[in-house]
Length: 267
Ligand SMILES: [Mg+2]
Picture 1 (tube, rainbow, N blue to C red):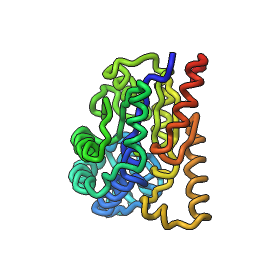
Picture 2 (picture 1 turned 180 degrees about the horizontal axis):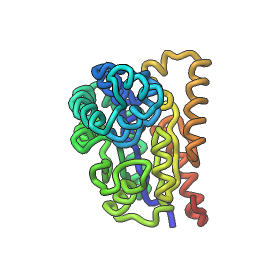
Picture 3 (picture 1 turned 90 degrees about the vertical axis):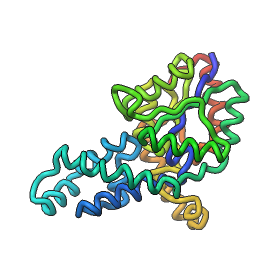
């Protein structure tokens, strides 16, 4: 048995260095509802289906309390629905500004294919958002063999394993322990672990670092160290088998995991 497939996350892993698009849209929506949220509050549950993500933000004690003070009542499911309805067009509108493919990802994908490895993907975005990003990525020379969003599976998105399972089914690859999940949030790692796959956490280009490529390039060394250390801790605590700064730099790691699979090891 050898490594059969790699399942990539989208924002913060394949494209959108720093996973900035969701933060911008979420902050705008909560601000519009009179309950502004911080960047950290927006980022905490990143990666799960966007409706679930909005509910998770509302359930943060500080946000619940701010909502109660501002609205005179506790937030309810109807508020989740209203925020989500507001969120959808806002997120779609700003996706185009955050759709640059991360450096090194297209050549990595090409190298994986040359090794006979299939390329799957999962996301917390909706199908129309995913389709839009796939089109943008295609123009930048990246196209996966499969792309699944939470609405494609009855059980919904992360941390449940269903999106990973559907990738395996659509790409006709098995067993699950011959597959790798790579992503930039704790929910990505949990998804991969729940699916019985090897997991790789992305530090520098993802949600846990939160910096655009330009911000990273101009950051001074001590700032970079703090940012990477914080991202590493969050992803390691989630149970990641391996960490890498960028999916565009994961090829050696993939070869290492392949060697472990070939020797009969399981995650
Ligand atoms: Mg992501």
